Image (tube, rainbow, N blue to C red; front, side, top):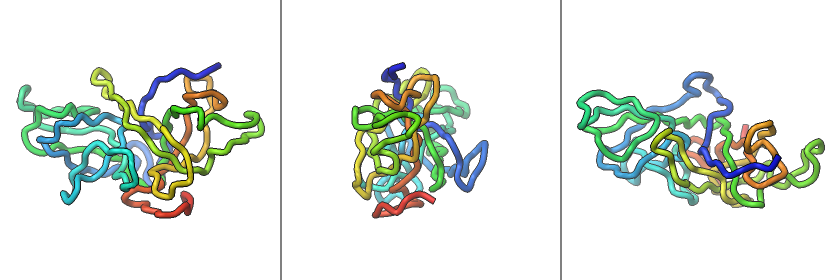
Amino acid sequence: MANTLAYFGFTQYQGGAGGAPTFAQSTRRIASSNGTAIYTGDPVGFVSAVNGYIQQAAAGTTPVAGIFVGCKYTSVSQKRTIWSNYWPGSDASGDVEAYVIDDPNARFIVQTSTTAFPMTGTVSAMGSGVIGQLAQFTIGTGNANTGRSGAYLSAVGSTATYPFQIIDYQISAGNGGDPTTQYCNVIVGFNNEILRSNGAVTGIS
């Protein structure tokens, strides 16, 4: 069955050194003045020259700081602590406590966009030119109702500073589970990340 476009960001698939439920996530900070929303499943990066503060990442060659999975902040409007799976971009009194999966060996499931990603050859032979290659993301449009990211993989190649490496296809009966058509889901790991800044195609341990 052909896949349909339904981007959902980067969803935790497997931990590296860390296990459930936190998968070795780190606590970071978002400045209350940061007006850009950050959704669960968004890649994030450090704010330039501000240690520990994160922002929604932009596609490029700068190492990502991990994948955002929620936050806690004191709401100005509600006058209480809010636990949220996304940062709406306002309404915090003081810094926002953010949670980021940055385990260098973590794995994520993400939907792909272009016709460059589908498997070549037969499913049984697992023939493909993209497994093992590096990939770039596009941030997409998040969903304020669910808090889910709209990020997806948008380019594949051998650029050493791309942030992710493709490990395998996610083959399933659900949407994205057909590896032979556009919008297939793949399993990725970090390539160029704060704790895994390869600078070369050295692979994932």
